[in-house]
Amino acid sequence: MASQTKKLGRIADVFHDLETVERVRVSDLTQEIASLRAAQDDIFRSLESPSPVNGLFTALLSSRVGRLERRIQQLSREHEIALKRYAEAAARGRSADRLLAEAKGEDARKREQAELEALLEFQEAVGAQGRGKSPRPS
Image (cartoon, rainbow, N blue to C red):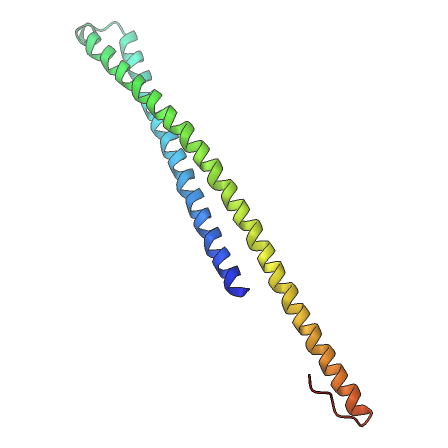
């Protein structure tokens, strides 16, 4: 049973590692989306200023805003998928933790039962010796 507990422990560790990977992916996507939105805001602010240089680059900046928006939409979809995968990985990790806790509980119960059986055998042996009898072989 101890080997099963070790296996379950390794499985739980793997699920927690997967959860960490997904959490990092969600965080990376969130940061990238925020960075792209900040770049978009910078372009909008530069377009608001009535500079003659901006007039020449309006089409270029407009195109850049469109590309940024498409990338933000793509990353937003990836972010949603990553959030679902993160939630699933977290659920698998919790499930593995429950199985591991049950296995550890079962191991502890079996150890306690073996200790109690050994104590009963010892008590029977001491009781038999006290009455001048030898213990019965099992």
